Length: 207
Ligand SMILES: [Fe+2]
Image (cartoon, rainbow, N blue to C red):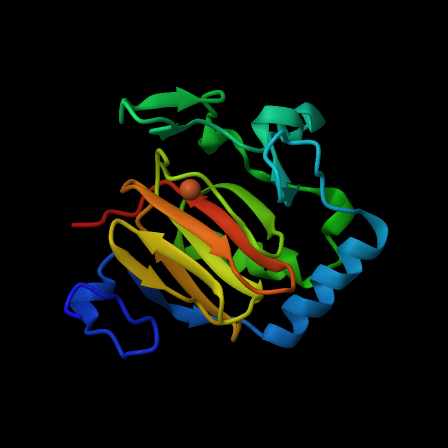
C-alpha cells in the first residue's frame, strides 16, 4: 500500500513543497458573493476549445479588450498527448507582465480589493476565475510559471495533482501558490462546479 497516495492523510510539509499556502487570507463569503455577482451578469466563456473548462478574466492589457479573448484566455502550455510520450506545446505565448489593468466591469466587486492586496505581495500576470465542471479533468501538462489559487467553490473530489502528489485545496479564503512548472493536472470528481481564482505569478521561485 506504500505507493497509494491518500489525500485524507495529513501530509508532511515537504510532501506539499509544490503546494505552498501563503500568509494571507481573504473572506470566503465575500469571494463567493463577488463570484455570484459576476456570474449573474456575465457567464463563463465556454468557447475556449477545451471541454468542461471556462474562464472569466479579471485583468487585461490596458485598453485592449482583445487581450482577454479566445486563446489569450488559455495561454501556452506543454503536454504529452499520446503513446509516444513526446512533449508538444499548445496555444500562444502570452506576455503576462502586460496584464496590469483590472477589468472595469468588476471594479465594484470584492475581487478589486483582492487584486490590489495580491498585487502588493506578488508580481501578477493574468488573473482569471477558472471553472472546472463536474466529473471533468484538464490535460496532463506544465505551464510557464507558478499559479496562485484561491478556491471559491470546491468539493472534496476537486483535486490538483502535481507530479505524483495529489492535494485538495479547501475554499476557506486561503491562498496557495502551486508549482505549475512541473507536470500537473486538476480534476473535479464532484457533482458541482469548481471555481478558483487563478493568477499567473511572475516572481515566485520554487526550490
Ligand atoms: Fe496548468
